[in-house]
Length: 166
Image (cartoon, rainbow, N blue to C red; front, side, top):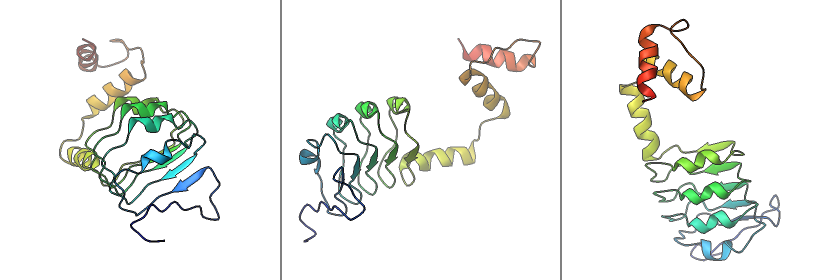
């Protein structure tokens, strides 16, 4: 197949519910793919995709989504409707943030973000300004909704936690 044409591969290990359209320098490969409602695996790595259409959330069976090595700058919050999604590969893109809605993907087991400005900034911040033990303890208590009182914790930690709840 020629490299400048849409290359949809179905390798021996792929089922009819999987498609791979990698390394084709595609900018907008989604038009045809959005009609494949039983699609489980979608590999679009190594293209020139700059945005993910929100309509991708209309693929209810999608379990594996690979969009690595593209030019993606943001993730649409609508992807939280991909209730079957187990793996999301977004490494080597241009992401600077992720939408909060991504936390509702309860089946998600793998999220690859390496090589994005988001990760580079996070690692840099952690290297030069790591959180204090007080902050880490406070985050744990707040995130787990643990009860606390002056009997259990030092007064400065209780004061810190009380300030965070205001």
